[in-house]
Image (tube, rainbow, N blue to C red; front, side):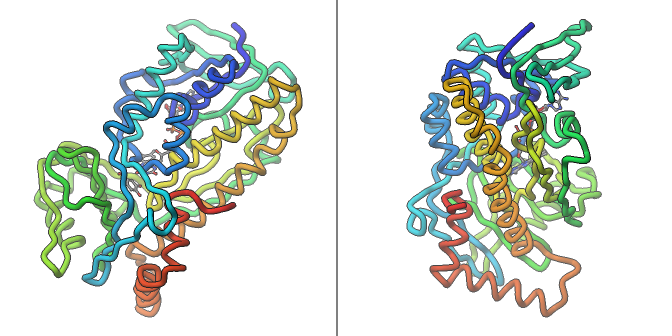
Length: 390
Ligand code: FAD
Ligand code: DHB
């Protein structure tokens, strides 16, 4: 089998790239280890930056996001008994949409299927060959049979546990990493919304986040020990913790409901550079991870894909490889900006067990500053909506 671009992984990065290449007349095949219903039901991120919304809309896969997603013009920061609003629209002219990642995945799979695109689910034993030649190939097993897919280029969109990153020789790659000593306990709740906008709360007991999915389903998170077990948390214990962390002095309370999903995720910052070697290019979580506090993970995957789509488009139109050659350098500018913002916001909002009382006061002083100085609030807002210039 032969295609122009072989894509490993049907996450947001792989599927969106395949869709955008198709719109540019470039053929691709996506190989995915999991089944379609699994990728369409895995609960992950929820915040789409303006640029992500625009790209989904321009490429014809934004209809359901517009109809069912919730446009938010600001969010709240809760700390020290106060609630302060960051007015994204006023500070940046932009907004964000809360629309679940697995809904984006459903929209992209539907678009690929409708266009007759090739997404092969349930593959195993994927391996990458010949990236230093002009005809690399992907070897894999599907339905018990071995297959070889010859390509012009291979794009590794296979997330943090995939095989693509390690296909770049270790001697050419440098990994930068910071593992946080805490995680997020995530819940999905059947019930009404607590507030019109997201609430990020800093509390001495730990961070909490109140987000939403629809008028009847809410998404919430609270800081926890990454080694904790979901079974150790009864619904009553979870609600007691959420109330203790989020309810404000003026009587605003978290709205409880029936919890129907619980999970714990660890938190780390990670960048692997270079993101390219020969005919192999990495995009999304395959090359970088951010802690979720700044809601950047999915949006960064989309920004890598936008750069790659333009670079591959130029190559197939003109035969020139300048944009492809500059891919890693171009993408890393936005990645490091988002890494810094996510790290900064994580340290600003979480209970840091290694922080001295002095440093805890600095945390509060900084929260006071970003919620009272327009200049500081604007910087936070630009990073959050993704309009910051890199
Ligand atoms: P992925 O979505 O990881 O997709 C990679 C795909 O490749 C997967 O479908 C995987 O099955 C497939 N794959 C893996 N190995 C192979 C292989 N060898 N061969 C073929 N296919 C393979 N971000 C936020 O902003 N907010 C959040 O709340 C948030 N929560 C998260 C919770 C979890 C549990 C995780 C893991 C991530 C979370 N993120 C969050 C990050 C965000 O979801 C990711 O940044 C985003 O999914 C990146 O998209 P991607 O396409 O690069 O990778
Ligand atoms: C959601 C996740 C985030 O990481 C975040 O910062 C805001 C919202 C969410 O899943 O809704």
